[in-house]
Amino acid sequence: MSRRTERVGSTIRHELAMIILRELNDPRLQGMPSITRVKVSPDLSVADVYVTVMGTQGQQTTALNALRHSASMMRSKLTKAIALRQVPYLKFHLDENLKKELAVLELLHKVELELKQQEHPNTEP
Image: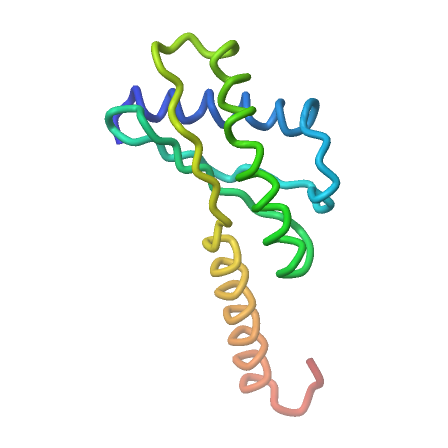
């Protein structure tokens, strides 16, 4: 990623967070979505917005659909907030990296407990 796309992505991330917080009143957004990262294409035509939503799988899917439904409205609001010739089209995705990171941390914790158990077999964890 070039420096310019990183700056544009960071600006979009910040502005979208404000729009979602202040202006998006969709009842399908029960678990407050958090924007984890924004990847902008090199030609600045598309911005992939990765979000996490707390809740069940169904609530996450519902919130993602609400964000996708509101994408054009959010893009028009971004046009007023960002000084670009053309604001990128927004594509929303659930960020699976966070789930993977939590699973790896849980596995590392289990390994740590097993190693302690092997070092001191007579004590309880």
